[in-house]
Image (cartoon, rainbow over all chains, first blue to last red; front, side):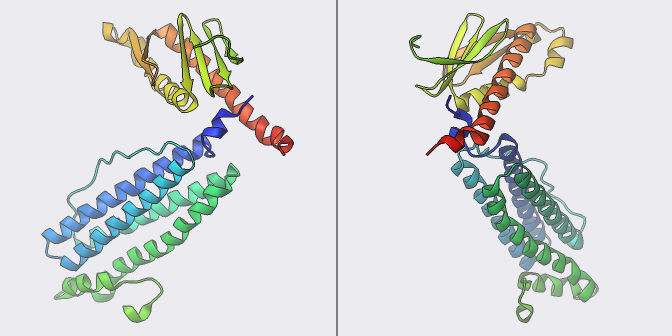
Length: 178
Length: 117
């Protein structure tokens, strides 16, 4: 008897489900960053707005990368519904703290997928997710450094202006550029 | 659908049976008077639809609208009109089928793959 399930896709149902959850999470992240960009624009933090627009695009690209993978493997990639996107934030620093929390949540989720892929002996998905594991090192570093700047520079006086200018210059692994 | 195609029975219950046709790569569901033939991806979608019905609401809501559930079998043009008992019986049938499909995958992975050359 033919194995129709395996002929359709190499993804186990559980793996397909958690990859679709990750697609949704990346789409949600992209929408949150877009909302943060708008908030920064409204409040005069022009450089930070640019940074969040860029982050939003990156998250969407992550979503597409996962989406294409699920489709290429014969799975059912689900175009995500994005809801509950906050539009208001308590302050400049809170925006960046929330961004860091978001990145940590994404890292945890990716780690869970890798764990599941290994549990199911799905080495293709494990290998594919390694790109995201490395990417999250950079994403978390940048988000953490942004929060750190609030302590290093301080928000008093022209502090927030200086922080706003410094945000887009944060890069991972190149101290000179900062 | 022609009845001359070779079918392998996957699962049977008092309400119906499911078969796999290796010629057309389709799953055939015989449930009561209804007989539909689905591609595997459509079978999985159909199963999700059946599983997602809120049985609890059907049981406890006295409104007539909750007496039956209408579920579309993808790309067959067939609508299943199911009472609560039908729904539970169909769920059992599809769950049993899914189990056999997974068992077949497992057998292919562990035993039959080594025979392919």
